Length: 249
Image 1 (cartoon, helix red, strand yellow):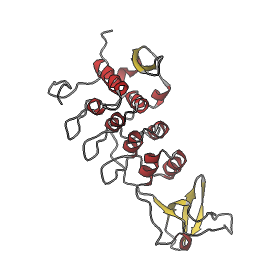
Image 2: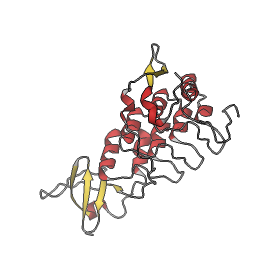
Image 3: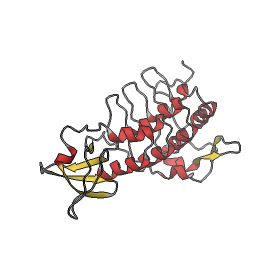
Image 4: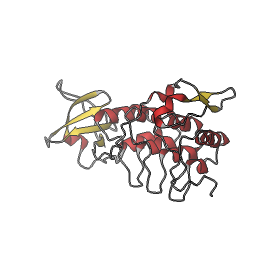
């Protein structure tokens, strides 16, 4: 088939799970389940700046009124509003309510980049709680990593799929130039690489600060390297603006 491949024609490119557990590229009008995530708009969103405080309770508290929220010592609580210095609006799982500020305490440790930490560990319930509370899907940590970087590096398939439902910037580079696809390739996760390649706007030709493509980092898994090579051989990406291929070290 001589038809050029592009993000606009990605419905003609799918991934099949072949006998033996390997992934193969196939041409045909079909979608795999993981390709259900729709491509974001052409204009890429800038990394979000919204910060939601996550604090650990230092005491037990039993609610006294219907609008209050009960919790136990050690519970992680998403703080939604601190306008009232005595009573904070908070969220625990799917419940919202008012909490005495003194029971959390100004000295209680605030969890930095909570969505990153949850994605790093593949903690799906806490990720859902944070996303529902409005934590930015595109927030960056000090190393420039997004939550998707950490989920991909940790080989957490369900975490990756959950994040993709919120349409993050999938080709964002961290401070060493790695994209989430670089991270998944480095980790040797065939399943996560397959999920990312199923996106219409994924780019396999981005080089990191060491001039490495994702395929260059796929040293832990021959299956991952093969999958990336198959994808690139279909012509979906020009390897670089100079017209060079990926034969360089």
